[in-house]
Amino acid sequence: MTKIPLSVLELATVVEGGNHRTAISNTVKIAQYVESIGYQRIWMAEHHNMEYIASSATSILIGHVAGKTKNIRVGSGGIMLPNHSPLVIAEQFGTLETIYPGRIDLGLGRAPGSDQVTAMALRRNQETAHSFPRDVRQLQTYFSDDNADAKVRAFPGEGLDIPLWILGSSTDSAYLAAEMGLPYAFASHFAPAQFRAAIQIYRSNFKPSTALQRPYVMACVNVIGADTDDEANFLLSSLLNLFVGIITNTRKPLRPAGSFPESYNIPEVKNAVNNMLSCTFYGSKETLKKSLSQFIAETEIDELMVASHIFGMDAKLKSFSILNEALNVD
Image (cartoon, rainbow, N blue to C red; front, side):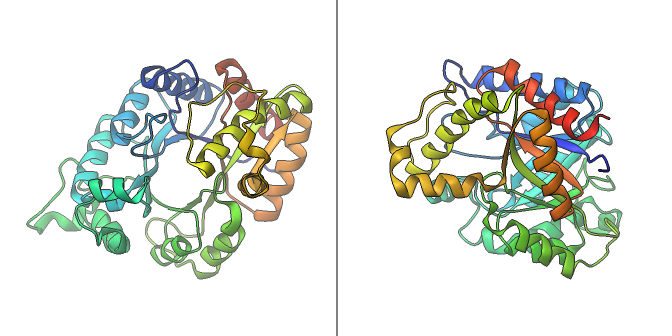
């Protein structure tokens, strides 16, 4: 199998016994470690009004992580553009690219990254979610040299080469990414149901652009690697707890492996969790090599991004290393 670029999605999740400060510190440690073993990029996701996620001020966190690393690309997975003025995002990411040239990615999503009440508290007006395609084009304009004669310009930002990505968790975004000729990143780590349909739509409708000549698909999946299949299965319980919390709206810090909430035994909850797990891969190096090689071959993705909700930092870093050995080390 051809080696595939590996990347990380990190939510700066608070673990049991930790706090926001330790979550941010752990994100830096993860970035430094995966950089040292050759990962392509680390992205952080914008979430709001979530007590146990520390990535709400995504641009600031990207700058912090980029400043603590040397070569790895750092970006957003993503910036939820309906929450922001395109001009402000152009200025923020223009500033990041100016400080850390050639290392900044701007992944863009149309969801609020929060509940609807919080979305109303964040948004400029109620219609911004519907203007996502227009806002993406406005961002491109702000970054373009062609905007030099406009009345409103982005500094820093104008003339900088900052890769834009369209993020998706359904088929809607696939059409936009294809129409604009932009790379496409799909959130199959929590919304896998429409993944294969979406990437088919994207590839079938792709129009080459100055940014990209051929389709480029990155899939984000959950990966838990360990020395043995049994150990990986044990570590998986932390992710199951996290998903149960999302489904039942009883979010808690990431818990140590080994226990399950009583609500997991409710058939509807268990079924919903299992559906979310359909793009989750766990096991030893040999098991991951087999399962992920099949997944990559079937979907023909260009890059694999992984979310690894593992409680202990040592086990989490080891999982990233095992994944790298499974796919990219001869």
